[in-house]
Image 1 (tube, helix red, strand yellow):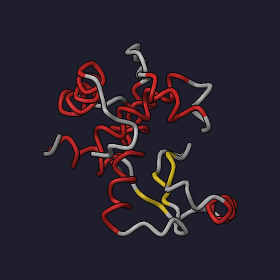
Image 2 (image 1 turned 30 degrees about the horizontal axis):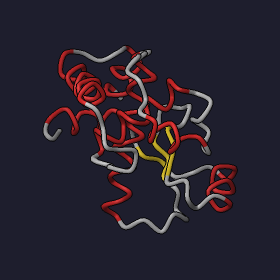
Image 3 (image 1 turned 45 degrees about the vertical axis):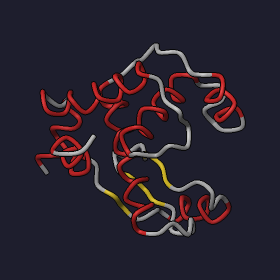
Image 4 (image 1 turned 135 degrees about the horizontal axis):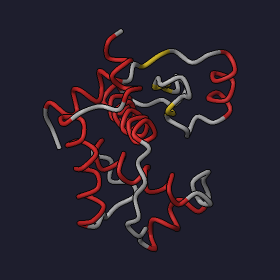
Length: 146
């Protein structure tokens, strides 16, 4: 999943430095590599110890999550047993739709951590990228005009 759609996804959601409260959270939770902030930005954890390539992957993952939130994406593919177990100890363990978003964002970013992925999950992730080339929800369009 390379190409123009990933570049468009990256450009639609800027990466910003963490605010003081976010930095405090990240300092306590270095295993959290970043998150999709409510202001439409990607925030990376400066305490994660990730190399630049890892940070770029996390930024793409979080941009994909923001895209799905902006578009109001709702997916019904089943989570596999290993994925349910993977997310069980996280914030997504009790939020299956957010876990689905996380699976798709990981596919888009090339992150195998919640895999192996099913054909239905890959198709859903491809639909998110294809949607970027067809049109953007108003929130994305407004950010891109800035």
